[in-house]
Length: 227
Image: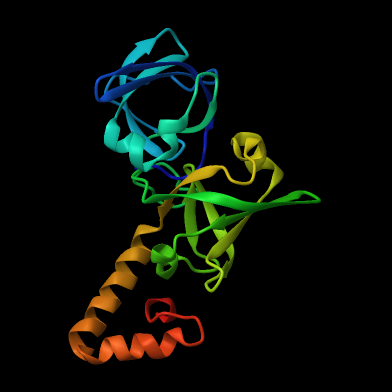
């Protein structure tokens, strides 16, 4: 498990491809690898990866299978690229963000960036299928960083997050341009609640549910969005 509090930025030192597998060698900030062992978990841009080899005091290798490369942004990374990293949370550790599994749900592009005084706003274009799980003031994880959703537009299918200078300093978000894809993990308890309530409604309402959904879609909303 991870907390969504990014602990630093790592550099992709090398990439090695083999049939069905890609190995990333990352160079971490000083002190990051202290106590790190083979088999340990590290979130790399929000993707939970397992340490497969250690090199000196600052480098480690991770094997990534084709499925993970296909459903995350990892497949497009190049040597010398920079990524957010976080060590797995230890028992009793303070959770400053929200609990994350490191299992990315989907990727989505940055639709727009607004640079304000001491604030940095990212607007994320959202696949409509995931809209039911996105709520203003709710949690979301972008490239492994736990962030609060500031605003949601369900008709236009986007949401926004605001970043403070410290978040920009500790992450790679300042290096991203509009159009760049991000790894997104939704808040799991929200997903469970929404799916459970919808399943109950389907069970209770049966054939009436499609008609109710059609009615609610007239002003641009789906039934799940109203839960």
